[in-house]
Image 1 (tube, rainbow, N blue to C red):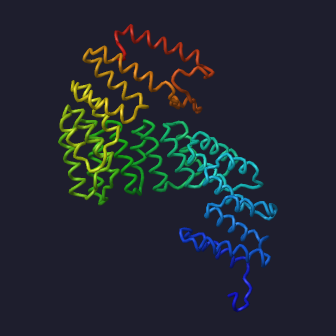
Image 2 (cartoon, helix red, strand yellow):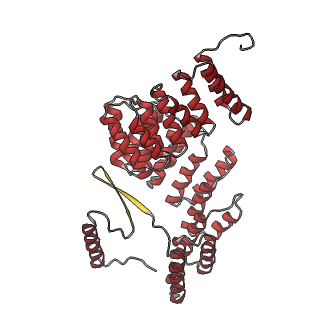
Image 3 (tube, rainbow, N blue to C red):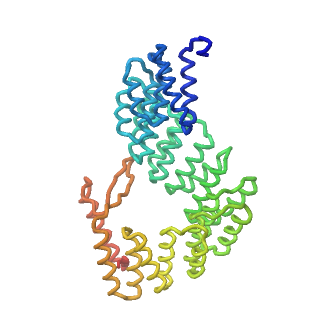
Length: 433
């Protein structure tokens, strides 16, 4: 084009920059993009907003946030909502969520993409509560959310077990008369199942006109996790009858159902069906379900053989499951061996010390209990405390063990004392080591 002395326009550069952004693994595309930028400046198109937006996007795709920032700041007046959204998305992608938050507050205009990017940014960086609050602000400003926002926030509500927030999002979907797509329906079923409302999840599932394999998966897994093994296995049979092909997650739900119901024969059957019938190679979750199933049934030796014959390296969680079984069924020597190996494998995990001390306590080996306690105190002294979330009346409360910073901490501890007294009066004892 240039050899024929034809002049490009702003659309030419937009298409070129998008082409350079497509496959940045090819380093030549990176260099070509910079050369295109040179022509943009030389031919006087740097003030065209479409070209500026394409340049910002290109540099962020290259991982060059500084160049994107320079292009943005060269002429702040020559920008539109797409320009700001590009900067916002770039900051989020780089993990600079607080920078994105500041930019979001400075935006002269926002659209649904702006809100969606900010919410996704919070969620991707683990700031789930901020993401949910951002959605509330969005609704107050009467911005209609898109499907991506709704599915993301339903997933967050499911992960955190925040039923109130999940219901709020569900009511928003209904109030807006948002179409019940497969993705939204699946996310709602998953949210209600993980928040303990398995009946509501089943009603929504049965009412869905269209379902995909993931819809069936979340319902099967939900029923299994609520100890509805019979219903989960019956649903799996329906799933097969309707022509769907199971995937690895499907069998996680099925095997979990068998484990919780103590169906040893059923578990073995479905595990074999998964491998031989559908060619799905077992993953850690499948082995974990089988080990749990065998351990619960007291088949500890068989569980050990399964672990030793695994094609992949077993994780500590699997050995910890077996350690619990050793305590329950009196396999002291094996439990001692596994417990010590787990402590050596991960010396910072306090649960392993607790499990091993529990085995010694059950056998009245008090000297060993004291030794493990001292070892725990020495090695875990500086460990950062984990935190938990509790939702109450639409508000999320965050706390750690022994926390006294909550505004109602005195009332909370008084209630705990009352509960402790009532447990003692009822003749119940808590198990300690």
